[in-house]
Amino acid sequence: MSHPSGTAPSSTCVFTPPSLTATLDLSEMFDSARPLEVDVGCGKGRFLAARAASQRDANFIGMDHQLSRIRRTDRKLVRAGLNNARLLRVEASYALHWLIPGGSVRAYYILFPDPWPKRRHHRRRLFSPDFLDDMDRTLAPDGVMHAATDDADYFEAIGKLFAADARYAGTEPFLPTDEERTDFELLFTGKGKKVYRCSFRRADGSRPPSTRPANP
Image (tube, rainbow, N blue to C red; front, top):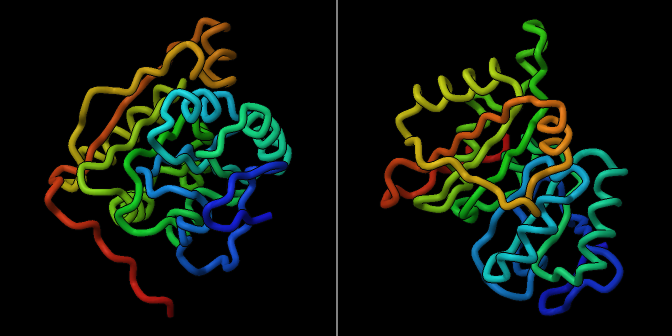
């Protein structure tokens, strides 16, 4: 269900794009041109609901490919009356490549993405050179990406990927409040696992975002 510009969601925060290959019109999703932040893989919505509630000066998009997670997060957002948050049921890499407008995102939060620990599955990991290209296109000047994982190998791979890309520079890692800690983080820390965090900012805030090649 889509919400026309200027209206607040009443029964759902889920947004259905009118096209799956056209860039989103953010004015159709939100009633204010506030800065945009994106929760990639919002899961059960604990982080997204807490962050959107505490940062009313920003709009939020939460995305996940699992319908059950989208429905659960939607119920949390609606109950909390969070009119600055919308949900997309979509794969993250697809959304960044086709749907997110260029230069529109102030911050990405990528918290506990699937580490695909087996070497033969590493190609399925979210972080890749192509994904960094799409982040560069969609991040606003001086935009930032925050990530967290419990997998030391994946954390090292993410760091190497960004270190090899001159478009990004490391910055102070994002630390969530207790209310913002995801269900995965609570599960992992409850088992005594270490959480690894990193943040990277577009290295030159004056540089315009890159452009996406035209549709074939």
